[in-house]
Length: 192
Ligand SMILES: CC(C)(COP(=O)(O)OP(=O)(O)OC[C@H]1O[C@@H](n2cnc3c(N)ncnc32)[C@H](O)[C@@H]1OP(=O)(O)O)[C@@H](O)C(=O)NCCC(=O)NCCS
Image 1: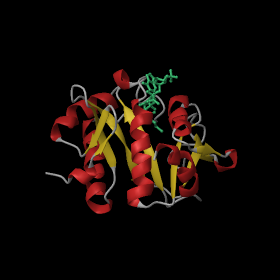
Image 2: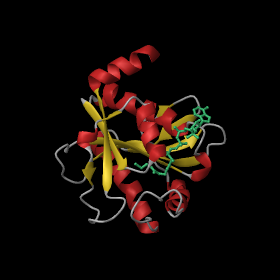
Image 3: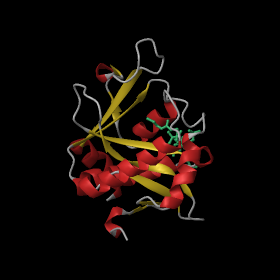
Image 4: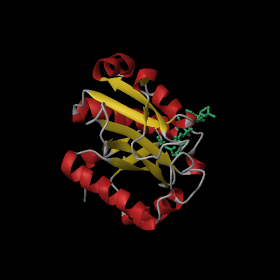
């Protein structure tokens, strides 16, 4: 059994370590073209499983990773929300990114923002990070809205072309959002 300290609970969600039973529904959401609309490709089953394996390795090595998310009502797996180190080099790396990917039926309920707030607070209060970053392709408005709702801010001078995407790919221009520990203190103190 994993340590319960790896879990996060919100009003409606449990963020927890991954189980083998998550692998099939995670592969299904990764195969959904609408979920992967803003990504260059859709992970196949092996790649989907690898994301889980890397998340679990990250929890073991770092004490954080991409948490598997389930709704408390019905214990249904709906996707991931979590933290990961950047795997490419840019002026703003090395850094830790906060990110999310939920199954389509879980959109439009505020689950991403609710879980991301818990992950954000864990990142600063327990992991002890000084800054959290997040990035996405310019057109991914739903994800940008989550970044804004959790208190992150966007400076256009930080925008960048993703180094893993080819020149001319419409997904290549990316926006970068940041949240400093000082800003987190200011935005989250009302809830503490
Ligand atoms: C990015 C993603 C997680 C955002 O999901 P989301 O459900 O839009 O985001 P939230 O959880 O913040 O929910 C906000 C929506 O829920 C609505 N909502 C309904 N009930 C709510 C409640 N009780 N509390 C808060 N919001 C609620 C809000 O009005 C808002 O709707 P709107 O976007 O129509 O204004 C989702 O689009 C996704 O998984 N996309 C595919 C993967 C992806 O692109 N990931 C990001 C890569 S960088």
